[in-house]
Each structure stands twice: as C-alpha cells, then as structure tokens.
Length: 460
Image (cartoon, rainbow, N blue to C red; front, top):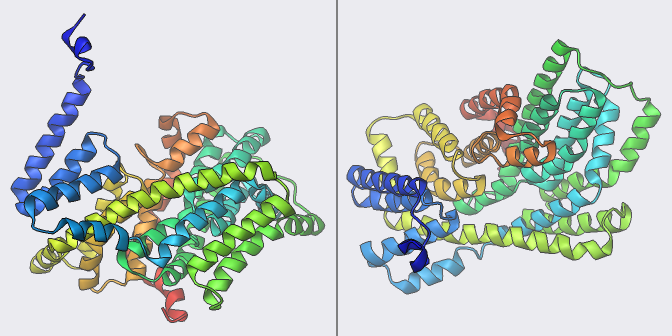
C-alpha cells in the first residue's frame, strides 16, 4: 500500500502538476509586467487555472488582495457584499429565468415552430429557415440562449433529419440561431451588463433589436444558400388558412413579446416589472391556457429556476467585490491613461476588446466574462467617447460568438446532448454560420448606428 493511499491523498497527476506550473508561470509573468496591479490578475488567473469555479476565484482574489496588499477595512468588504446587489434591476434576472423555464416546458416553442414553418417552410431549406425564425421569436420571450437551443432544437433537429436534411446541417443552424436568445431583447446578459456598468436596461434592450433582426436574417441567408446549393428538401406551401390557424395557436406566446417590450417602451412598467409580468404570464399560459405543464410539475420548474438564479447571483456578488477592488486600485483609470498616452484610438481599442472577449470566451461563460471585463473596459470606452449602448451590444454579440465555439461554448454542449453529436463534429457543423457571425460582429463594432439608431429615436 502506497504512502499516498495511507495518508488519504490521491497521487498528484501529471495533468494537475502541469496546471499548477502554468498557473505559477502566468502569475509571475503578470506581477513582473504590471507590478502591484498585476497581483490582482495574477491571483485570479492562477486560481482559475486550478479549475476553481469562477465565482469562488473572484471572491478569493479580492479577499486575499485586500487582506495582504491594502488597508481596506473588513467592514467595507461586508458592506459591499450587500450594497452591491441591492439594485432593483438585478431582480429582473430570476424573473426572466423563471419565464424562460415555463416557456421551455410549456409548448410555446412547438407552436412558434409551426407558425414559422407555415410562413417559410416552402423556401429552399424551409425547415432550417423556420428554425431560425422560431429561435428569433423564442429569443424575444426567453432571454436565454441555451433555453432557446433546448426549446427549439429538441423539436427542430429530429424533424429536419426526418425530412431528409443532413444531421450536421440541422445542428449547425439551430446551435448558432439559438444564440439570438441573448441579443434579441429581453436578454439576461444585457441585464448583467447594465448592472455591472450602471447603464440603461431599456436603452440596451432597444439597441439589441435591429442587430438581432439583422443577425437572424444573416443566419437564415446562410442556411438558404447552403440548402439551395445542395438542393435540400422543401416543404409544401401552406395555405393562408393554415397560416391563420398556426398564428392563432401561437398567439398567446407571441403576445408576450408585445407585453414585455410594449410595456417597457410605453412607460407602463420598468424592465424589472416587465420581467415579473413575463414570469406570471408564462406561468398562466403554460399551466392554464396550453396546459402543457401540469400543476404537479410547477414546483420542479420553480426549483430549477431558483437553482440557476442562485448560481448567477452568487457570481454577481463576487464580481461586484472584484469591481470594487478594480475601482479602489484605480486599474480602469490606469488602463485608460495608458491607452490615451500611446494614442491608441477607438478603432484599435475596439479591436483589442473584441480579441480579449473572444479569448475569454474560450475559458469562461458569458455572465462571468461580462462581470469581470465590463467594469474594467467600460471606463476606458467612456473616456474614448464610445456610447455605452453600442459597447453593450458589441459585448453581447461577442458573447453570442463565444457560445458557439469550443471549448466552453454552452450552445455546443446543449446541442450535442440533443443531436448526440460530438463537440468536434458539431464545431465543424456550425462553421459556416460562425464565420458569418464573426463578420457581423465586426460590422456592429465599427458601424455604431446599427445599435444606436433605435435607442436615439426613443431618446436614450
């Protein structure tokens, strides 16, 4: 019997040793390059490389730095934990999560798919186009990208294979179209961005409308071109009577779009109140109108929503502490001064921001990226004269791209579970749409009027 076994320890694997060596090397490099400021990033990177959850890594980084490298009183840390998350806007997150869960289980997606298929099913790649359209419609009521992939993909992917489409084609179009869930409002990552930067939720929601519709059109165009080139099957053209029936069946779900967005921009209620309305409305139509969710299943939906909300709020709490540390150490100001001193203009800054966000997308999920990087990059963007709504839409589009490429693209893993395809095969499947999304990301980055025209028209 080995000493390790007797002591109750597992042998130290080569993989874990390599991780620790990489962590130490990165940490030392950051400290050497950036001095005391580098200690913050070195600690965070080192803890993340050990495989520690991002929320705990953030909290430990802050506490370690404050206890050993600063004179901030402990009481201030405790106070920040509470005051940092007592913003009214944060309440929108659990409500939108709850609404999305009721809609995912409540048959709304199936009816939206039938409506979309009746409109565009007879075109080249009709079912794929219907999938893109259904994703856009579901995105306008759910606020979540993985929820959109689950709701639409679990119905559309098997249906497309049954209709004669290649499995890879169906998986590619639904995986990427599902990312519309965080760009077309309402959007949970947009709410998180606004909480992290004190921006207007209503203004950012409006800023996502035109880019969201443009991206949906672009993804549909790619699907249409591939289907036309390969002569994929087309459905029978629906009569106007069939379209009317499909619309009537889906109208309760479509009304939610009007209630949420119409309510916000007519001034009837705030985005947070709109989230609460959407949760109540989703519960009513799922349980009492469509009757796809029995009452005995409601506690499970509530529990799943509470679990996901708790996870996000825990990350937000630790990210608020991290943001406090950034501000206390003047790190955003130091970065802004460095950029301005070296005459790096808006074009270069936005390019670096895109690259940084795409790199972060390889190792973190969207909420964590926004909560860590937005408080650092946002002050620099403001000093360079970049509009906060434009910057928020840019970050959201980057998050969309990150959700569709490995190694941690959430949409890939969700779609992999539905389609029973490996991540490598699925990565190849999404490539045509992913390339189009990167091109669209650059367009949104350097043509701000795309995201600013509608908010400015409404006075944001």
